[in-house]
Length: 302
Image (cartoon, rainbow, N blue to C red; front, side):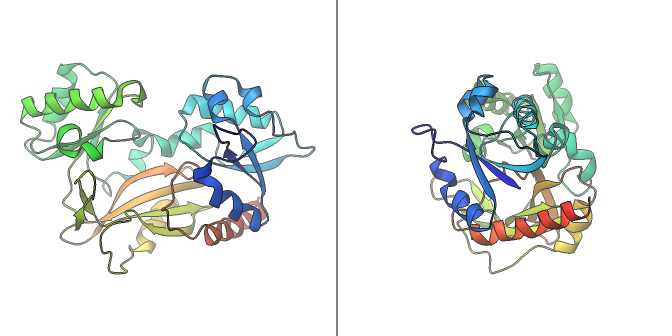
């Protein structure tokens, strides 16, 4: 099994510094590590991006760990590696399934905030979608990311019936996302979650959320989503979420979950495991040890 990381912009023969500890832990746990140029890949130079990755004589499997990619870029990456006889753990369809909320929404509907979405950014379509929430509070994001650190200006809308506020928030959101907008807009019903604290810089409200990483439907690790706030050593009801994980069309993915203010748990969203970030204080060595165990079970059963 190969673990493939982004290189450093400053030195293309070294791993991206933000992933250095993961790179070291992967090697310590017996994985073969490689680097590639994320920048070359995103401009369409797939061969140049993968120049340091040699072809394998026999088919081998790989896991990518690095920055988010659009599904189109991921497909180029996947195909380029496949030509080198290396198959990433998630194919392009599986990557997009968890990367774009609308693609996996039917798997988690009823266990996640009510959501609707559109690629049509016209005012009429936005009004049509927000009308479905009545006067409830909503948040806005694109198919992947929100502007949650601009909470009051570009994320949270106190009442979906306040069309002036809807228009202002949508416009500010689109302005901030700019060329980085992922596909379209998603509106989600705002859920009252258990409060932790306010973010030390942006002052957005932080709530009790966790990131669960699954590989081969097995739990790799459970992390506190936020570095700030007192979690009181509480962890989510893992059996409930494992049952849902068994229905997800991906070999390696993250599931962000949260505790409601009045009790009970919900899923916030899914993500492809290859681009799911880890907390700064995460035990990377334990993370790759668990990945190794899950990978062994996955490929010994195929």
